[in-house]
Length: 456
Ligand SMILES: *[C@@H]1O[C@H](CO)[C@@H](O)[C@H](O)[C@H]1NC(C)=O
Ligand SMILES: *[C@@H]1O[C@H](CO)[C@@H](O)[C@H](O)[C@H]1NC(C)=O
Ligand SMILES: *[C@@H]1O[C@H](CO)[C@@H](O)[C@H](O)[C@H]1NC(C)=O
Ligand SMILES: *[C@@H]1O[C@H](CO)[C@@H](O)[C@H](O)[C@H]1NC(C)=O
Ligand SMILES: *[C@@H]1O[C@H](CO)[C@@H](O)[C@H](O)[C@H]1NC(C)=O
Ligand SMILES: *[C@@H]1O[C@H](CO)[C@@H](O)[C@H](O)[C@H]1NC(C)=O
Ligand SMILES: *[C@@H]1O[C@H](CO)[C@@H](O)[C@H](O)[C@H]1NC(C)=O
Ligand SMILES: *[C@@H]1O[C@H](CO)[C@@H](O)[C@H](O)[C@H]1NC(C)=O
Image (tube, rainbow, N blue to C red):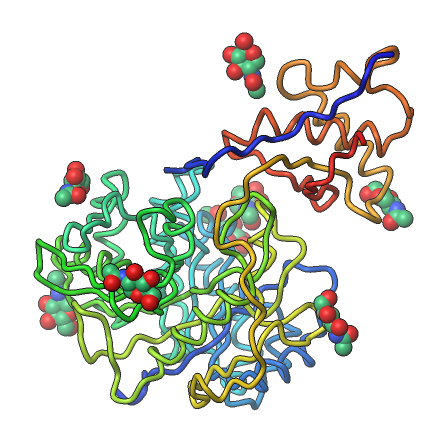
């Protein structure tokens, strides 16, 4: 009899797949809404307060949320969606209309203080023309705010670390050549002139998880007591990866002639869970990192970073909830301080007033700080919608080489003839081929990783 074997992904060793008072150290939280099971805006605002966050950042200008934030003390950061950047960059009327319809109905009762034009658009290569429209759009939006008498709202945009082409050593920090002159320089000029901030997303998790051998976990978690790194270019000494990453951007700005633009940490955090092939994503590390970073950022007097000692670094932790509809690897859906039902993943106090030893509950022991070794399959998730699974099956089979041959009639894995069985075969086979180029076992939430051989 012919045997059916599901194609596993075999991991032998770690895969290096991708190689002042106004702005005191208050920590806020990012309130992302990419989940179909999250608490209501008004309940969410209560939860944000209970975390003792002083600020909240949202990824749009959702009127229900802005309404729920009315007459609270929370400072609010809103966002202009990426899709609107290009049109707004050439049309002042459209910019005025957006501010009139999105900001004016809530301002000033809702303390809108920051408006980010787009989210990490310089990391997206799908429409690079938008890059060059970014600063013109920021200028139009600032103009609209001024024209409407709204002077308290700073305009910026959020950037990921990949705006740098070099970040190590920090003193070598340099912006990517494709954006440096045409986008970053005019942006820094705008931010400097309007006394706004360079909004930066900083995740020590990512560089650590791609190189856990050379980067010490404690150093990435801002937990190291005995390891330091001295930058040979600047002579500055680092005790954690977060500072190193932030300073790389500071040195890059300096290189372009803007040494004084302030940094705002638009996102930072650590995943509390993830997939089997991901390392270091657990509650222990997430709690440790976030507690350490909150302590540092709320410290009085401010600590700053080695390149800017004693300076306040305002920030937003990512994220309020675990968001089940974020695409990509499993870690993406597990950055929450809260589960979707609002209960805490671990104790955390964003005011920084709770000292480390006051956190009462013992954290669960970390389980995956070493890379997983062994076989993993990609299986249809429990409760997945059958008709959607059918479409995903067709898609997976249309990709790669002979991806679905064994589940054709007469093939080795044809029986049992069910959509779930066939799709599980197809997902595993697809993933085994595409993992190396960034393919994931997700299929819009229809698939999940398993270490139990499904063909058994
Ligand atoms: C941008 O403007 C064009 C031309 O007016 C319009 O067709 C398009 O729908 C607009 N895009 C968005 C995202 O509003
Ligand atoms: C600018 O936007 C407004 C409002 O959407 C629209 O009526 C107008 O046609 C646009 N102008 C141009 C030149 O596209
Ligand atoms: C500094 O950055 C450049 C690229 O901008 C790179 O070629 C060089 O290797 C870096 N220097 C060090 C010491 O890493
Ligand atoms: C940045 O702003 C400061 C203060 O307004 C100003 O003195 C400085 O010249 C500006 N830098 C550049 C490069 O424009
Ligand atoms: C630092 O301390 C840790 C834990 O106590 C230990 O495992 C490690 O070897 C030490 N590293 C250095 C460079 O002393
Ligand atoms: C909320 O969800 C978490 C994770 O699924 C679960 O452990 C917890 O019991 C839930 N809490 C309540 C009150 O339902
Ligand atoms: C399954 O998905 C289809 C297509 O998206 C949708 O029309 C249908 O209502 C869903 N069924 C269930 C039970 O959710
Ligand atoms: C499919 O096979 C071709 C030719 O052997 C190869 O170049 C290509 O990379 C394969 N595609 C995948 C997804 O493995």
